[in-house]
Length: 268
Image (cartoon, rainbow, N blue to C red; front, side, top):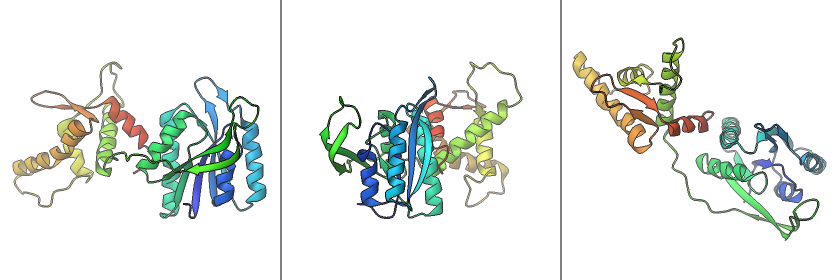
């Protein structure tokens, strides 16, 4: 199941459920998250388990690199962004890195984000449970023999890189357009479609194989080529909206498009 690996784990009121997979399969690096809830200022109430687990790992696996990190266990976007940063960094250092995420502990939100991150960025997830589970006693809820399972998940359709790059460009152009302007915050921000098309070719996100010397035909070619991507962003992906103006059509980011930008902020 495991090769040369990097593991990601979430602190909770558990010992063996977190440490046993690491002791058995011996990764060379582990990112160990502890909890915070930023909205309320609450800190991890299980830091004693974090300390105990780290001491055990340091004693038993002296070559293991433990990287502690704090994370808001209730914030889906923060969790998936942090995972994407780790995955991107490790894959840049070693494209063959095997990354495993323990979804047994932490919170329900860390589990959801971890499963989706695993599907999006081709990581492995595993779930640990025990032969002796008792949530009502003091100390760890799971004791006895630890059982490691790899749950089956259904793949998530990952957006193509070009669409994320165009979405980022739209966001930047909108921000630049309103940078030094006073505007009603309740009025949605936009970029003109014609300006977007121009920038797509200027930034070489989209290119033409042959450039027509006739300016009108050249602009028509650019419009046709870009329309394929703009239509996909609007109809298939629902990342943008386009106004019904006959001339000077406006391009807006949808709320869903803004969320996608946050999810892929540190990837691609």
